[in-house]
Length: 380
Image 1: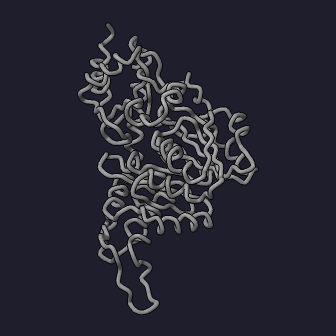
Image 2: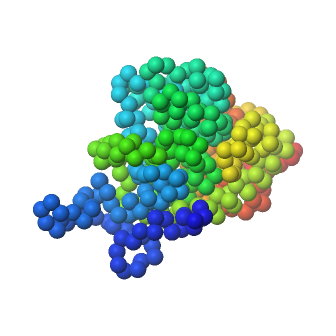
Image 3: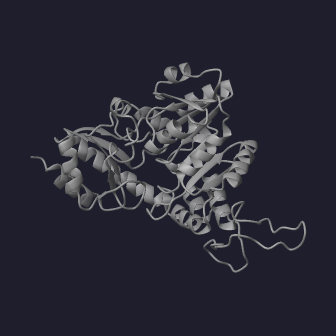
């Protein structure tokens, strides 16, 4: 069955006998027992709910995983995943990550006795050199947020497999439409379902997908114990969004490629970071490990004043956090998504007052380019 068909039909499981085409929203906290020791398979919605189960089964199928677990937010998914590790554990992570993940590692994981070493994961030798006897996992984003670095997943997965480590990949930017980390050897895939899976900027969600059934059961125990599960209505919204994932992302990528080309040629733009450009350092790896480049890009202008001018002049494009929705959004990472990262570390990665991040939506490319042209001051 093709990917787009799986998006629409999901697991194919029916949860009632009404013939409803859309999976019903089982808006209930608890379920009746038929008798002592008897269960319908559903007892309490924190443990499982049919609407959430349908979403989890669908995402597991799309990622070719054995199981998926849906959480209230992407950060709730990551925080629960970190409960796998005991105090004294060490994790090697990409040094270009979403700021919320940095914040979790720095202020929560570290407090809990988990040591995280940040490395340039595009440098495989550097990553391998950072592994210690107490290392338990390697944590990656590829493409990374916001600098769009691309890591060779097969190479990293081979290292983690040989050393008995977990390979964890945040696949939010590309989704299983364009990248399937489990097929490349990863053990755990993370999604902020808020983004492309939901696709409409109208709900929050997070997902973990795993290959190994034993690991799935460990995470399921943590899921029900910590309680950060996704509510039935939000599960239904993400399911609805997934139905159009293929057509949305194909159009968004097409427009992103046009915008990247436009920005690259604009005299007010110093650099464009988009894996679909042939000059991007990760282009060749992307061509091997992904089937598309997505619709996320970042670019720099000459200085902070120029960046603020762009943000103040855009009108069709929204100045807002988040990404992956039908509306095109521009983010100022220095003050928004990555504001909590220490300045020296942030600047070393190129996240300065000149950097802007763009999530390309479904508007006509001509309208978006016209808006950018106005914001950048044309070709003066």
